[in-house]
Amino acid sequence: MQNKKIVQFSMETIQWFIFLLASSVALPIVVGAIFEMSFSEVAGLMQRTFFIVGLASLLQSIIGHRMPIMEGPAGIWISIFSVMAATGLQNGTSLDGTLQLLETTMIITGVFLFLFGIFKISQYILPIFTPLVTGTFFFLLTVQLSGTFLQGMLGLQGDSAHIQVKEALIATFTFIVVLGLSIFAKGWLSSYSMFLGILFGWIIFIVVEGQAPVIGNVALFALPQVFAFGEPVFDLSAIPIAFITAIILISNVVASVVAVDQTLGNTGGERKKEINRGTTVFGINHGLSGMFSSIANVPLSTSAGFIGLTGQKRKKPFVYASLLLMVIAFFPPIVTYISSIPSPVANAALMASFVQLVGLAIRNVTLVPLDNRRVTIIGIAYLIGMGTMFLPAEVFSELPLLVQNVMSNGLLVGTALVIILEQIWKEK
Image 1 (spheres, one colour):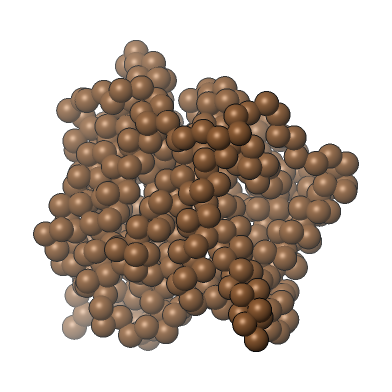
Image 2 (cartoon, rainbow, N blue to C red):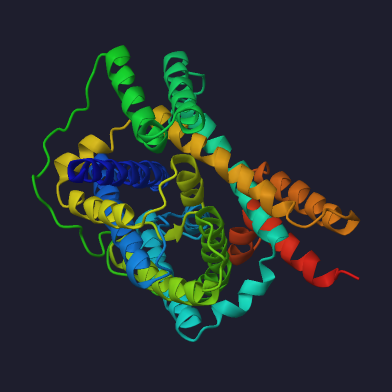
């Protein structure tokens, strides 16, 4: 019986670890492409990302909101990285100079978040996030990221402009395995559906492609580098960007805590404390991201999808998985090997977890009967929010940097519209 518990705990830890890893791999590669980094620079960014993701998730689970919610590279920060790179070049700032300014921006954002949490300011934002707002946030999040996941599944990344048939078929198989096991299987097969799906998909990928991951010449042990982008550079423009970003990011904390609370079946009685503690630690994590020249993290709502998909509700395996990811970051050969999980396979597994998040979005939106007021608010937010996602980035290039960062993000635009309309158009 004891051995069975050890095996179960180990499998749950490994599956959480795979989820943490799969959710962390893609965005460092995207940032590397934006800033024209070399392979070694991308590998260093990947190492620092793993370390910060593990540390941030651990801190939140122990002293923050104290829930099994992954802290992962933030999509909003990717848009900020991208916009600041473009505007920096237009203003004569080198890509390296922009990265140094981004270190400062992440640290200042962390200071604002820490103050919002420590002085319990963030709890006053909680009433704004009604079921209509959180449901819209979840739905627009799935819309925004599903395109990225689908492109990854079809092999449409990098220089590839056409569907890669073999990769697409393997990804489809992985998606079906993960989803099929989670729905139709029983016992441990259902609980470890994501782990098994990625494992089978990876093995098939190696067999079909005929090549295993290549480690190359890397140091056996290396500490994550502090200020790898260079010494932080201060600019007054970073302060308003950091302040607005901090306010917007609190919505991620609220949405993720609400989502996981609902998935775990919690009543939400401690939600104000969870939000305040989570925001405080959120600020610390942003400061650490800037210090270690990584991509700032946010609590990922997809954690609720993962928990719903696998049925894993215990926190201890999550804590150990976070520790494991931190330790792995000190060994570059292991980082190189495990980060070689084929992109189509990783994207397919993440896409499967989003099915649960869509269900959570629908349940939130329909929690209260949809009268004419609510339908109109949702319709406006969905149409404009999703429409913004399809606009070219250069549409906003003539606007101030702060406005660009907000208006180019359909998720933020749609969520902000729901919040504003609900506050202005009160129920009778």
